[in-house]
Length: 298
Image: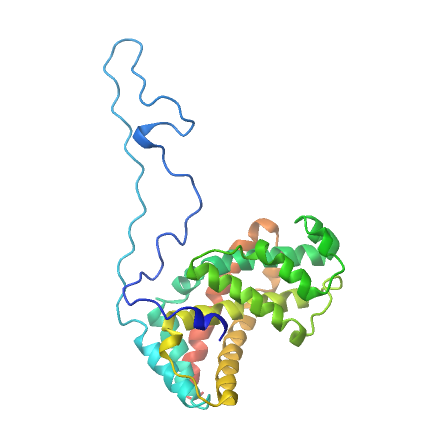
């Protein structure tokens, strides 16, 4: 399950959406009321009047409330039953996914917000692919100062794009985004995508679908605590468990992209991030519905 082995799972008290996840990169306020350009703080008025009171410090973002310590338990227990069955207990898979989205993650909107770096990485990947479809791979690579990769095998090109799409970092969130991208590279040949120069709009959607699927799977597995789940000792059963989870998630992502096909066709660079966030939210909502249906044996 890819990145699932990288982390033992979220601590029970971890906020649903950490306060830093939505940071827009704004510089911190200057100390002592100094203006941002470094000018003198609170210069006294020339007419001898008493100096004005220093400005109030900017409000700090609120600390997210501590979440329910047991919020991952239902998803974890059901996924353990699904894994223990070797992939045959589909009802437990459905309950695991439904509980994860609806209870553990706090709903589709919050689940999408938790994707953090994977949203930014997905938008950069989709933006590059859209440019490659519109202007050709060579021009799209030149725009990123990666023109030397033009004409190379597609796996080599994507490896060269890794630092642009998902810059390496030390957080779990950044690790999930990067590992999902690496897994996507290995999935390209199986999806029949071998030539970036002849990339079509449908293939562009497939590449993004693969990335979003891998990112959601990694997020789910890390959250519920992959190290606490015992996979079947039989390697074929373990592979079947992983394949079924990946296929389940991919169907949800594919449905979300189908719904948004018109928006994807009219995508502009300034709307890519918003579009990617919407796809994640819609995908999580569809996954919860699919999970409920699977749990009921529908």
